[in-house]
Amino acid sequence: RAEMSVGKDSSALESWLGPVRGQTAFLKSNYGSKSNVNLLPTEASIDSYRRNAAKTKDPEVLYTFAKVLIKAVILAQGNGAQGNGAHGNGEKGNSAQGNSANAPCFSAEKSAQFLEEANGALRKAAKCGYHDAEYLLGDAYSIGLFKNGVRDNRKALKYFEAGAKAKHPEAAYRTAVCYRKGWGCTPDARKVVKYTEIAALNAHPVAMMEYGMYLFHGMMGLPADINTKKS
Image (cartoon, rainbow, N blue to C red; front, side, top):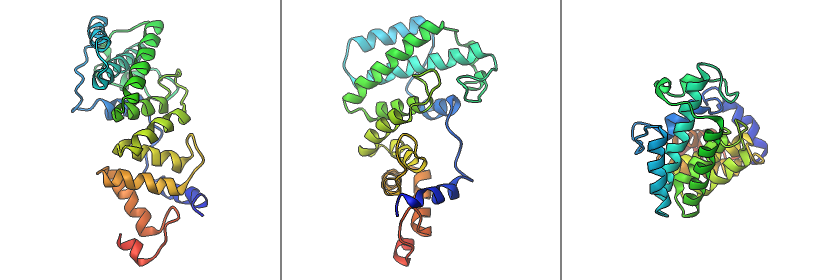
């Protein structure tokens, strides 16, 4: 009953849910105005972050280093693309960041090195229980950042769900989306409800709206009785 209801109920939500994420959405969600990363994407500044990260096992330092590397690569790709689509995601290269024209163009080999370092730093931070790192790993895999634009939904879900179990609101919401869409898993309405509820209870605004819709309309296998609607 729960799995059977996912397809119908998922289609009902498509009119207001956004498309698959690309680099622009990735940057906006991970490098917003409240970001603690003041990035000057030059090799000298990256070396400074690298030296800091090498001296410590502090997961926050590793996470910050990884964010610097990832943002530097995305900006460099946007600058090099000069308006052409990047990684087949349909976005213009210079749309990832308004000032990408001022970012340096690293070689493909250098960018690959940066992404490998970022992946390693994030995995170390995630192993220390740093849930923002788990979320960022999931988000990066979901846009194919570590595989030349090829999305790895299974790995994305693995890291999203790890963060979700620790009540990371965005990770919980993205886990619910994966189970609703069947991205990296078999669609499962029970898990959609479970993780949407976790996100909603931790003040994720979209999850709060969706969870309310599931309860009120009896979606995702939930009963359509008056008590459920009142919830």
